Image 1 (tube, helix red, strand yellow):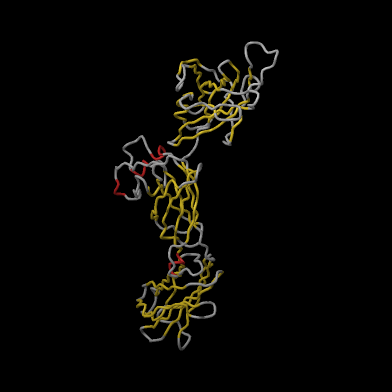
Image 2 (tube, one colour; image 1 turned 90 degrees about the vertical axis):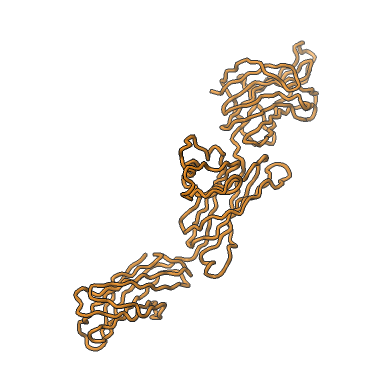
Length: 452
């Protein structure tokens, strides 16, 4: 809040109308609501009325606090003819927050009489407490998000995301805010992460540098990426900057921590370095494919236990290089190397039939683990599902073998082992019989299609 209270003038000697009619036309405070220890600027405009009979020499412009103490002053400001005005600048800082009332005074010497005229004006505004707060937000992107089909677009337009101000790391290093890029294409990126630096505090942040360090999500947690530091322009309170950090080639899914080191404006005045920090963690790459095993039938044959089921993709991402095999479990022999069932590529909402055979002791085995391995965005994943093993044979069984069909209405029910993925039955899907191959095995049948 900023308010101005107009004061009067005083003339040395008799209380007569002065020949020089000096007025404080304007007193502005910048910023309008300064923070504690932030330098506040008072922009003062002084005028000599056009109806004045004399010119005036401005000897002093000063500002006082509520106790009358002078906070800043300027001497020998200049001369004012009738109808002229001039500007003066004063500075001050505040140690405590709250409402402040300052008085700006102008002392002028009349050219005709030599008398001094003093004009004052009050200004009231709020001083905010200092809050240093930099928020870092990260979002994993796909390289396709940064590409455009329109080759005529500028590099900034080709980013496909508005407001991006730079690409760093990997094939990056491009400052997209540079108008000199012209028609150049944006740099190729492998693993882009959008980083938004938001200043939610009350003081500016500068000397901002970003660094990204990642460790594998699965396995031994070994470091997979370490890029940076990358310099980002300063951010004023209430503003933000968005950049792309390219992590480079990644063959393992990683938890990546992006750290922003920075210096607050108050630190600069105190000769403090950029030793503050903010961080955000993102998992890369994005994982959008969701494998599911449905419509499972388990039967015991002379060659072993056969699992006949559908592999579906209930997610929005594409699975490539998908293979299905039987995992290790009590009473169940895993599929030997080279004996996996090759499925290939599954798009979103697609499914394909498969069958795998394993040697199993049905008197011991309670469930058969179905292992699905696939690639998404260059990273190889393995998910394990479970289907119930067939019931042990009884004395009155017929010669057709034991058949176990899971679920009601023909839809199989399978459990996920250590995957945490929700399983979605692809109900009502119509299969189409085609021929396909099996790695290391005989030709088998394949049913594939898209979920409705």
